[in-house]
Image 1 (cartoon, rainbow, N blue to C red):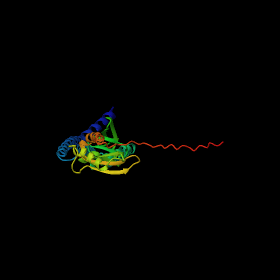
Image 2 (image 1 turned 120 degrees about the vertical axis):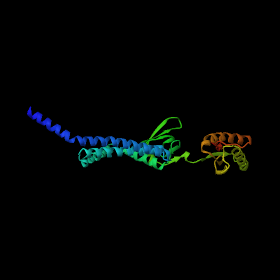
Image 3 (image 1 turned 180 degrees about the vertical axis):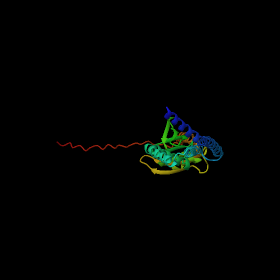
Image 4 (image 1 turned 135 degrees about the vertical axis):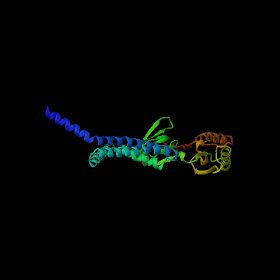
Length: 278
């Protein structure tokens, strides 16, 4: 019984002697939490007022919060008398183990950082990549990019392969070129066909005057003289003008009796010579 009382007295004396340290650690923890929240709120307001992309600012703030909380934890541990070198070694070992277990996610993480920093595309852009990903960008997260495909489905593309792919950004330019390929009959007059086609395009108010539409002879095919037609419009007017003018070009050529031939073959039957002798 005396031994138990002695141990309790020693434990109480130790607690009382450590009480100022515990109190200081608690004050450090509370002040640290308040300072981190204040700094994060200040940076968040400052970044939102600037021209920094929202996804990038959220990512930077998230990274900063993790770093500050780790520093606060190390500071509190040091205040309590815990050896910080071993504590940092444990954190480093844990980080290494997590990194080895999440190699794919770290690749996506690095890809997300590159996308957010260099901005090959933004939210609202329509893109297609060399790894067969295409659609309108809905959201850029740190691991995945969310896109809406043309058929209405949602695509979640990992940022690692996406950052290393060749990106075709359709929405990055103000204007966009439409290109048509139409074949006309060899009997048709090329200059007349060119005038008919240019008349359709120049009368379209959505087709730009500069650069002006052009009609070029691209090749002499087996059944037709192939024309390449190029015109420009605002990016948002690309698909409406493209499909409408395809129909108008066909109708205008028909009205001027300029045929659009279809593939055909001529078969010549040569009668075999008959031998009437027995």
